[in-house]
Image (cartoon, rainbow, N blue to C red; front, top):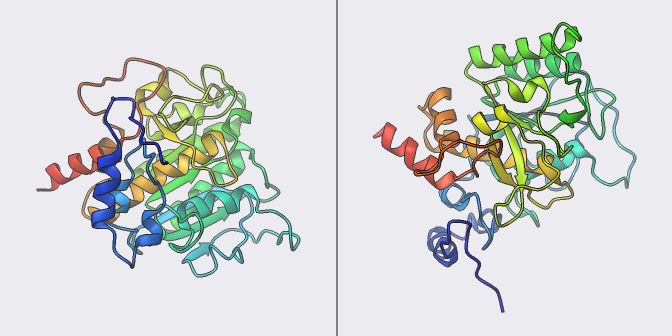
Length: 311
């Protein structure tokens, strides 16, 4: 017998499932399977309405991505930057492939992607399979996907391994922060994994006010003990569930926020980057940002906010 659980606000989730089932059609049934009964981030409010629009381009900066993966083979995935050597046949999917699959896997895949109807531009970081990446390399990659037309960029790299020093200690950090400013100037949202070292703080990237750092949580919305927390993360970040697709921690949680942003932009194509960012990061009242733990992503509330400002 399937258990029906309550979310952390005490609400029964049966109604959420029922609403999705009523909206689902034969065409999008595979996509609707994404979140199932347990949907702490309320992604069903978006996935039941759209699988994404092809004019919403999602950028992914990560390790090598296998474009021959059967769940990605028919998806509009474009690569920029220097080519990355192919993986050995029969090797398990790498970090980059798993991250892209969380977003882009076809609707009929065993685990459909969050926004498979969007377009994707992927910038692999050379020599990286299970990231980290050097700050200067990450800066170049971020600038490349911005130039390629991305509206939102996912960074699921192992950010806790990036230097915690400032630009004066590592020029690459200054380059990376300049690349974030470039993204902001072009109206491109940047979503980054907060890290998995279980400590307070985080690298300069996740402390930048334009970046949305993401903390991982369990299916009840409780932050995982390994997630990096901090004042800046609590101030402008989000908590999101780590979807089980061969990844764990904040690497798996960041694509949930990225996918929600892409779906919101698909539903409200005229919204500005500032409006989408405000909607997705605004806590549902009466919640407030008063902790190093950021609020849980509430995609349903973000939809309501954008609907109201777009009316």
